[in-house]
Image 1 (tube, rainbow, N blue to C red):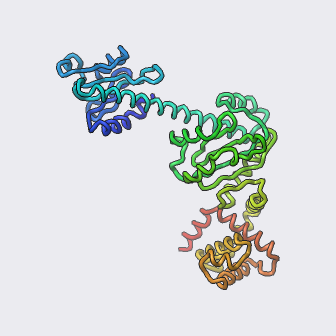
Image 2: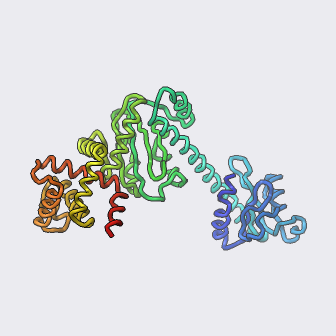
Length: 382
């Protein structure tokens, strides 16, 4: 039950608001499940039993204490959410002195619990949406009926064209288990039009395109996510039937793995080129692994990293030695030396600039996709 999940947090938070007063939380059977007096947990509070039975606040004055076994003086208020009693919360003190505070406290607790209940419902919805998202990315005629059932349960209408997007959230604070983040998503994404769900530290979206509006132009979600700490947004191409959703998702996933740009859309030329490089790196994994091994035989791992990262900056600067050197805070002659050394070690010095850049970019992509391989090599070298 939700009250049992948050009882300890509720007790300590509210006791602090009440200047350290004793606070108890009881379940609908009157058993104390959380208290600032831990020794009382598990005992029956007869005042709470009466509060549940009458659905009204029970005030226990000093002279009434003998009539309420397991209780002390104070106010015991039933916690109601949408008319349902979830339990009872009690505050220690003389009822005449604390009754106004008790009324405010009762309202606070009920609203707090109502918000938690809503958040939990949204978390359960996230699980359903995640299951539907996974189902649609492997859509077949065999699972079509189940997909429609799940779509109905989360009020998602599958319309086309649509596109898949993945947002890398980056920080552990972003989680499906974070009610605040779930509330943020519900406030920003129109649930009836887009399917969205959180899977670990990634936000997955199937965006239905209306009036030729791509995902990032229809609402400010992406910029707000960047402001909250998200580090990448990758968008697949629009598709026109369920069987193609997998393709759009795989494109977004490949973009996520292949580059460090904040926003990448496969319909953009640069993103498409990066995607093709990533796919090529995957096909040529054994070749690229051998090329890295060759570099590591000729130089130390830190030198390999330095040369490759210098090449990354050089190509991002569109082969401008001056701009790349400034970004690396080195002299342009140093950069030219590094590039010459790298191309010689890879036996690419006599190749065309296009071939050199394509192969080096594949090598960079491979290293980005296999950080553990680099880590293990560094460890073995030391």
